[in-house]
Length: 344
Length: 244
Image (tube, rainbow over all chains, first blue to last red; front, side):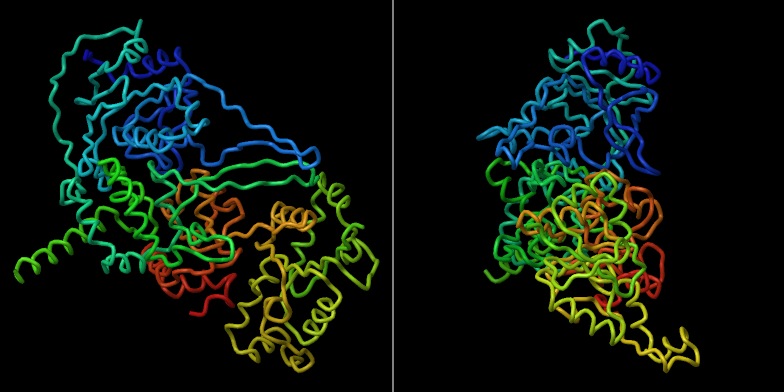
């Protein structure tokens, strides 16, 4: 792996250079204190120091609202929307975000591949960037380091305000072909990247904790605070559930089918014909959300399906913290273990 | 034959009805599907029977009760339009005060001339088949319901909160901008139009079916408003639904 020096003042030039490959998508400021991934129009608007974007990068592969087909009720025909394969460079992406895309790949492409996702995922290149963990990040606890370069083609590691530019893949090599490279002058080791939020156990111990946590009282505590808005799922980078709806135009002759992101925290999510609801109470839903992150998929894949971005916690109006829930479950599990030991 | 459609207003600002006259481009398409037989704001005709009766406004007096019973008897399908008709709306704030006090404030010493009742949803008096929520009801929402009825399908129901549509639009949360918003427990379907333009949600489409009221009060008070103020905000459109 090659490594060069990149001055902060040279970043706009790098973005311009990446533009030769295709559309560049990077974090921009949004609202008063938030960020979002947008297509770069003016490279001075790109934000390099951000905590997290409102919606995950997932939105570029699985849009929040996506038209799937047009249909005609009169002629009884339909036409699928054709998704074009366009070269795109995703710039200044954090490591947990990249890991979430790799997990999404697994969810969307294993078995029967989801064709729209597959096409959008083609010819996409990723340029990573290091970040300073805030009070919500806990990706370290789920096995994702700040400098985790898996999935990236290029990676910018910030050192004293400037960057080390790592060239990771052949794609990355092609991306910076012709870009003026400066020899590495800065030290390779960086510190001051402590995670403030942590899950107390190593992530490979969590499936066992969850194995015995199904009837825990913690779920009712969480449910009493939860207002059921669905923000945790809707901003989660590894959630992929959606709802499909048909809409007919005012002429009552044609219409379109679209899909929207859905959330298992909403009371309507598990409602079926006849009015039955498989997860009627909030307490069932708060539990299900965490089991989807730490048990069900983890049992099959061996990885936690949470990447520690902290969005569900940062964007929860009620201030419910996912790592705190897990830590409470751990504490309860330890108590149970202790009693079991004493009895023997 | 096209369905015979009528519009009626009870205690309300008539804004929902007026909203329909603003359809402009879609108005002619709508009239291809239905026959308008009674609509006080737009025409003089009267009819004996209605396939679909749209009701705007809440029921607030004995004469209202009599009239809505009469309309219900002559209608196949009855739809409540807008917040006042669906749950009493802002009118229902009067229910939080003793009825005599309310009459005196409005009519002074002539109060005995005006009979009044607590402001009620139409569904408190007669059977309501479908509802279009919002203050005012949105044109899109109304069109979806009308087209569904014309096609003989079940109209869309909104069971998820405003936050869902707000998040899908990637709006910055108004709580992060120092506002106190009712989005988390308010029924969506409005495309989160207020939060998208920087105005906090006031709950005009009603509270969700199974809301966590205590949790929501906790959220609101933890963002710097008093419990009293939080309750008042919640009751603005939902006095009949939220008993605090």
